Figure 1: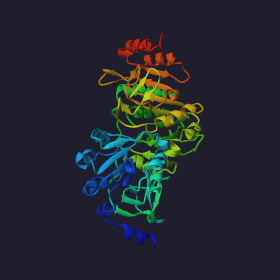
Figure 2: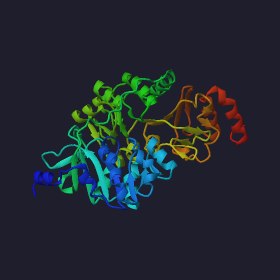
Figure 3: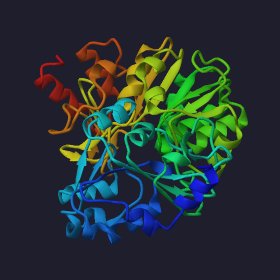
Length: 432
């Protein structure tokens, strides 16, 4: 059967797609911009007739029913990255967290709990009969491959991107149209004086011709502003952000001196403003690649002068970093923090930076602690922690002894907490 005939036969309504679901299904949804929002908004319309649905999804968007005990027997969410919705759902026993590095998420999850349904928001079909999952390739390929039922939310406003995941019409069970603008994350130009100070410290560490990975938030954005002073940077990242692609357009990022994928700008997902999506689609040097590649520490380590910049919730005097929980309360997830810390540590001339403001709760809590909050998991092992930056300076931990690390960390803690941290270090027997 030709592609157009299959398209006409499989094109239907959202209700037709939902009718394919059965009790005990394991539904995996594509993430970030490719999350099938219309499908997830409409899912509660069929949940009363279904039991024991497992929903695998990311942190994006908020759906009230996922934390509504009315649906407790109908659906349970599992996720690798918590947000407001999954935190609320976990609180009432309707969500569970998957501890994982992003580089191994797809392979590991499908090996132990394969999904039988896959749902994604995609481009229109092209002349080859393929739709494209264009803006995210974290785990989607593995979960597409093990699905028996594939449902596509077709958005004519999505554009194709080099490296995006193609899905042929012959693989598809059902599709429906859902025209809407891609999800926009506006640029945040509200960085504080403290953010800019930290950004300046970090930018001073990064030389011309370095390859960078930046996380999301005001601190990485503050770094990106200063990187406009640098030349011939490379980009090998987890997330394409608006500020990164701004550096591509301005010519600060060229990839000229990258030792892996020279001349290419790689990331495994994108989230930002309209200009970001336009640049991804129109610039042939930009490429979406699977997280199993972008986040593979072995690949990252081959990139000379690899500079990774991420943030955290707290760090202790041993150098152990927690980026994902507040004590026992799961707050976000590991993501690519450990992947990039490990790779940058092994990169020739590279450096892994963890940056954060020194306090929380309006200055009442130090993020540098004697020991991590009880119950907090270690996101980045102390052996992989390289450079710490706060508004009070730069602490070099790589290759240092425990006492040297503790003193370096205390020196960049907020002055209000330095004396107590010093005393705690002495009580613990790591400072003398």
